[in-house]
Image (cartoon, rainbow over all chains, first blue to last red):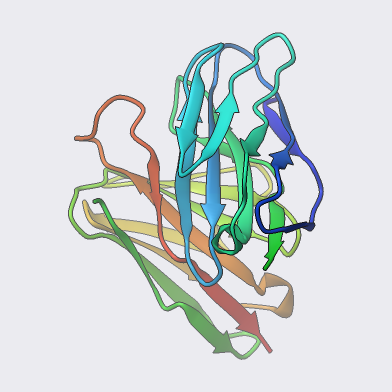
Length: 112
Length: 118
């Protein structure tokens, strides 16, 4: 079945460091891919998405490119801030329904 | 933007009692809502799909008699954990999609409910 695998956390970085959180997926068909973010004490929010191969999603300085050949959707940011500290979830949805399958989440700590 | 409200945010109950969690779409009508459970250091697991006016669809391994779902209206779905036990302690999150949104509009999530069964 469909699944998402993302790197284990927690990830601790200094402010202004470069961030990569790896995500790979297994799916039949052509899923849409998402990154969701959960800030402390809040619900999940959509960070960015990509709906087809080679699409790049971007938001708030974060980027991720839908790589069909490597079945990956790695999240990157060139210069992280303390306010980026949160849990990040990679996810996919089967285009045929509303179900979203999440990875385990990666907790990110940014040190000032 | 679209908002999903979930209540309560935290609840502590005694073993054997039942707990109801509400999920409301505040500015859109949601014919379908989703209930997830999040274990510590693990992913969000889809428990069931709540359908307005019909029975919920449960994922494999989820006890439908234990986790009662009622989608009473186009803006309200409830999850009742019946005869709760300590192993039911978890973080429960609901979500809904605004059907009037553009294609591939995202799911909107509630802030979750932390259930602790003592």
